[in-house]
Length: 457
Image 1 (cartoon, rainbow, N blue to C red):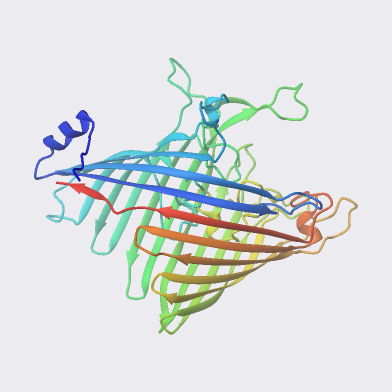
Image 2: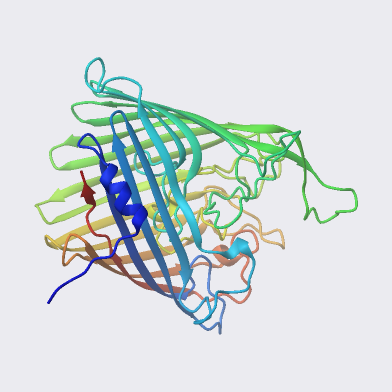
């Protein structure tokens, strides 16, 4: 049976123009995730009906590389099943449209690769910033729309050293004068860092060095936020009026990843935040993390860990604005899969201590089971509305995940999580849920089809 393949004329002409020194790549992804939410993100209230829905990410990646340059674009559509009518598109505002450019960048080599140094490049455009374990800078890939930055980046790599210097400057529109920025991006923001507004500008320096035991990294990150005030009549402070100038926040610290002794891996992180909050208040915050993993054979690994993020002292009004913000990372990866902490729902400004134990079992090359247990505690006591001191314990979460890959292109992931919450977690100072349930659950089934790149040389 004869097969016919039809290609757009523009694509045919493009492929004809590709020389032997360049290549064109095409790849993509279709990812669907069905979720049953019965307390995901916040404590479920009693007698609440669980939510069931399916979301989908569809991505098309186009890349072109030639002598000393690369160009890459990732086009994606994110939406829920049934969100649009079956015959016409939805009639809601443009801000809810799911079609967007996730990445669109160009990278050029500033030297002939390998002749003097291994790599020195300049990358500019919309891009993901993905560093270390994604704790502070990550692509937030769990979120269907993920996270990206409009930025410029200089990258240096040579003899085990990696140095990246990056920056960004945001604006709402082309203007004839002034540079006021309201910090609210259009469309899917993926801004789950608790700041409720995107930065006006940012600059960072990242340095990494490979050692015999693993890697050591250093990060200095500064993000600037537009100054604002409220009108005298706005007693509830609901509508900020943005003005010229910025308040700057500084985050500095480092990580160490590696193997301490045979079969025992470790991860150590420590960061400090200073400068000013968006309202100009002085900051003094910290984050510390230590975790280990023991490989008991080729199939099973297990290890404990603890994360400490500073927060305001709820029982001492003089100790405010000490809440550490994990910047633009991937919180879903660390503080429980139910996303109670450092994600969009919020949990007050009291900080968090997370004691955890994580286990992984690789039953087959294409089948992995994992079980994580978290115990969440407040670092400082907080007062209830009646003035009494509440228990610091917030609750315990269990996360079970099954990952099955029948082929390299197909991944099937299923998960079930349960949160055993305390009255403190549901209180007005934390999640603020009236008539809370003591037990919340969340389950999901995710299918990802991501074929290998198709290369035209």
